[in-house]
Amino acid sequence: MRNWYNSLCIDFMSSKAFRFKQFNVAQDKCAMKVNTDGVLLAAWAHVNTAKTILDIGTGTGVLAMMMKQKNIEATVDAIDIDEDAYQQAKENFAASEWHHQLQAYHCALQKFTISKKYDVIISNPPYFIDDLKTENHQKNIAKHNVALTYTELLIGIQQLLNENGNTFIAIPSFNYALLMHEAEKRGLFVNKKTDVSSIKGKTAYLTLVQLSWQKNLAHESTLAISESNNTFTNEYIALTKDFYLKF
Image (tube, rainbow, N blue to C red):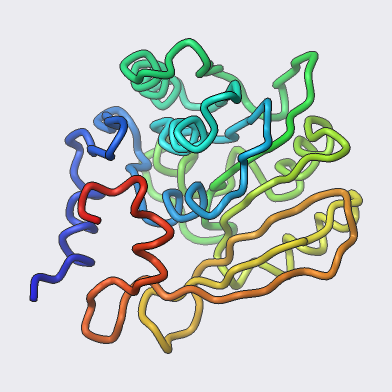
C-alpha cells in the first residue's frame, strides 16, 4: 500500500503550488510552507456561525481560505508581518473564488488597528520559543517567536475578539501549560482541546485549542494522523477530506 503520509509531507515541502479541492496555494515566497498542523487547525475549527474572521500570521493564506471555504458568508481578514508572506497571501486570495471577501494586511499584530471585533480568530503561531535560530531572518520570523510571543498573541486576541467569539490556536503540546497560564491572565479559557499524535499510540506533539471568554468545562479529545503502518486514520481523513485531493 502506498505511504500517503510520506507523499503528503513531500508535497508540503515543495515550493510548488499546493492544490486543495476548492483552491490552490502558491508558496514559493514563504518561509513557512503549507503544513499538516495548519491544515488540521483550520479543519478542526468551528466557524459556521461567524460573520467576521481574523487569521493571525497568515503566511500563504491557507488558513484564511480554508475558513472561507467552511463559511462562505463570512468576511476573512489576514495579517502577516513578513512582506513576502503578505504578498503571497494577497496573490492567493486574488486567485481564489472568494477574493472579494478575503483581505490581507501587511502588519504586525501589535500594530494592527481596526474598528471591528471578530467572531473567530485563528492562528498557527511560531513554533519555537528559546530554540536556536538560523541565519535566515524570514525563517526565524515564521518558525520562532522573535516577532510574536504567546503573551503578545493573547493581548492581541484580547483586544480583537468579540464578547461571544472563539479563538483557535495550534501549539506544540509542551507549550500548552504556558498558553493556558497566559490566556487565563487575560480572561480567556480553554473550552476545547485536542491532542494530536503523528502515529496512533505515540505521545502527542501538537495541541489544538479553542479559547473563549466563557469559563466552561473543557472538552478534551485525541487524534492520531496515521496508523502504525503509516496509512492515515479514519478520523484524520474525516476531518480533512473536504480539503485534500487525496481523500
